[in-house]
Image (cartoon, rainbow, N blue to C red; front, side, top):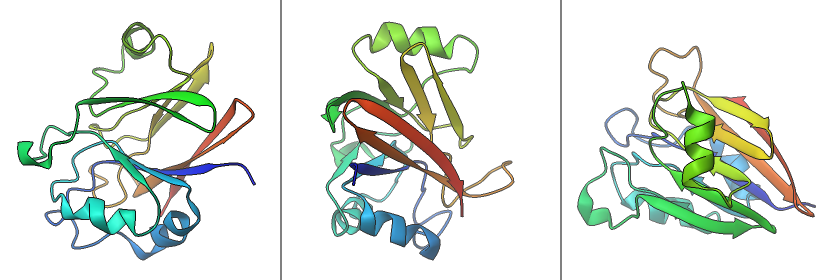
Length: 160
């Protein structure tokens, strides 16, 4: 089985929801890694997520500074170079901006907008999982799954 990452962002706990949705939990259970692209708001969520799998997270604009999370992460997962940031900026020019900022990355995970985004072209996969707890103006709560194997990457945004 190829390594699987469960990807979430903008959980805004406990303001927008008291807990993660039940429908998300089976995906966390089978993940080899959990990525949180910021705005968790309560750092105890990191401990809750770590029960399922190792967690990598970045600082969101609403996260308290004492969480000690980095603004940017660069790491490798399943032989694939990845980067994570909370706010990728406006939609216009995003691909070029992320390519310049993370030239070594095959995947860039981000959050902030609560708008799911999956775009894989020219060797760069851009992924915003949306939010599993605060859909804002989106029709559904969402999260993403990311599979890597032999340097190949596949992602899917799923509704809860």
